[in-house]
Length: 365
Image 1 (cartoon, rainbow, N blue to C red):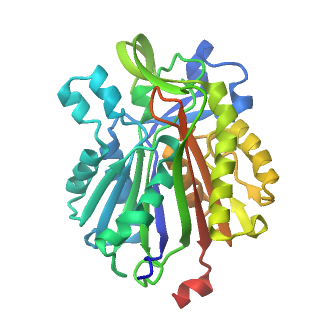
Image 2: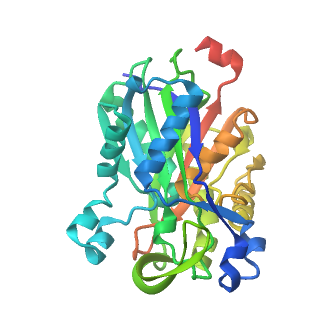
Image 3: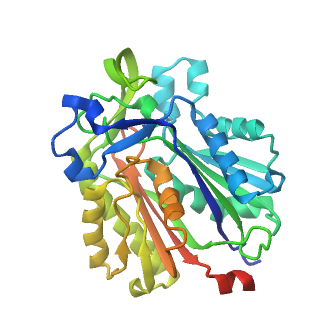
């Protein structure tokens, strides 16, 4: 049996109202931060990831008039949930239980009053979108028997602000909060016609020389308030990153996953019209662009979307695709890279390859 071909029919994004500009950080922001990253401001949320996700899905329904009764599957992707082996170390049982992505996915389904045949949750950090599509292609779509009149929802909901040490000069100003909702349907669907046909997706973890990422309990942590001010939390579980290590590894990881996916599908680098990588910040994408060129990829590389939103982790690719919705054509390559599991010497990487369906192709489906 031929695998079900599917793709993205629509994307919605949700940005929290609260905005923190670089001036908020005062002396905690390095002078060269904007030059290296291009980030000038970011949104932060005082609502949890499930609430943000529900707000985003409601925006999707309002924009597309999709019928949530047609939702056959739900994949909830969050980079801001604390991995269980860390949660069990620092939290009590009830707190740790709330950090389970699959539990949150079921909560979202209940909040939206939908009954998909299958629900899944996962992390994946900044590689989460590629991880979700790889999972959907390999197992999820076939297991639910997706009909041409149905769709699945891939949700990314990122509230990294709740685990950020805003006084950290390396990572305190990098991330912004955001939720995205991608409606995935079969390529033969007339009810939900596909705009971006998925050609293939990959996701994997690779070993590195040392751990670039971990969590710790820290005292007297600088945090923003709902009114836009500054406060100090007596104790907070926060992440830490080896910025130099990530900056060196991520460009090579993105290039490696792009090369892997092109070779697996017999697509020549010259056939790629657009490259939409994870919007980690200007510097990393500039370095990644050099690696792409070494592979023979000459397509324009999208950069600069982090300027007003920060690094929105697993939401950055769908956010960029939504922004460029009418501007992309042909083959679109979306490589991503991220930290691996906390405290472990690894990185995660992945890639998505889409073919844009033009109006003639859409009418022929």
